View 1 (spheres, rainbow, N blue to C red):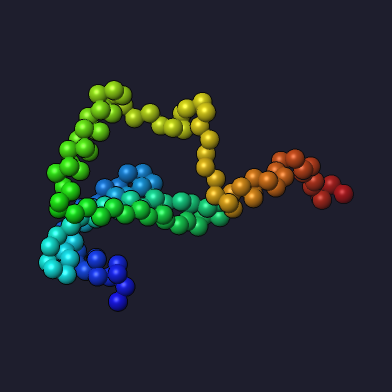
View 2 (view 1 turned 90 degrees about the horizontal axis):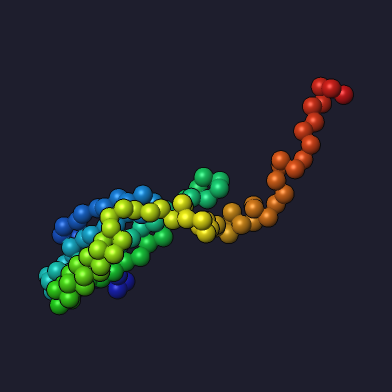
Length: 126
């Protein structure tokens, strides 16, 4: 049995937060000793030019002994951001210096010449 199978033995309680291309999973899980801990998983969807997609996931394990300090720092950080920048969301896409991150496949396709540079020929005219 793998270590992850042991660590994530049992899911007790879950919540999901969908946020655009990201989804956050909050799970209460039980250890072998029947103690509880929390996992927070961020899953982000990436779509390729051909329409296929894949997900990148990042996971945080949060144990009871860290709950109070984690909650305190999270509250402090969120309050700081809201107090200094307000609740208005400014999309990075609207920034002058925004540069889209391309997958390797997209970068290769961008290097190919555009079909708009070719002359359109109608063979019915010949």
